[in-house]
Length: 126
Image (cartoon, rainbow, N blue to C red; front, side, top):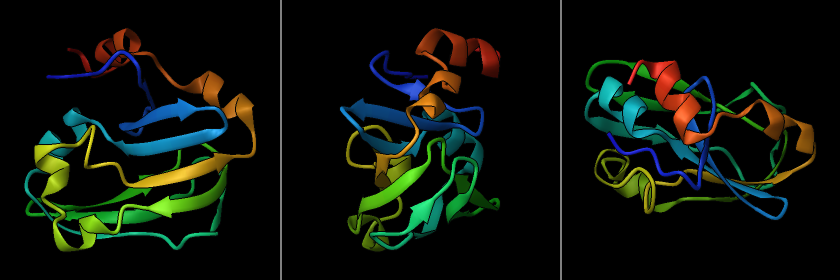
């Protein structure tokens, strides 16, 4: 499996790309393989305030429905609307075109709890 080293990872299997105070968030390759074929995604609204650990949407796959939990606190500044029409992008391209939301981070301390690629691989037993 692929776990880009420029990303951070949460225990809930979201990846986070940090650019200044903006966090781009998606689900890891491990998560999308566990879910199976994604058939629907419920996205949050731009300008929604979110706390670390809060659900910001759901992913429906053939096998299950799962909440997406925010690895950081902040304000949602952008959502990947293309996933409404093509949720399967999460299976085929989870790290590039399969990003889900961008959040303006309000508490940089949240980043301290995220794992690097090596730690995440150990966490999932890879």
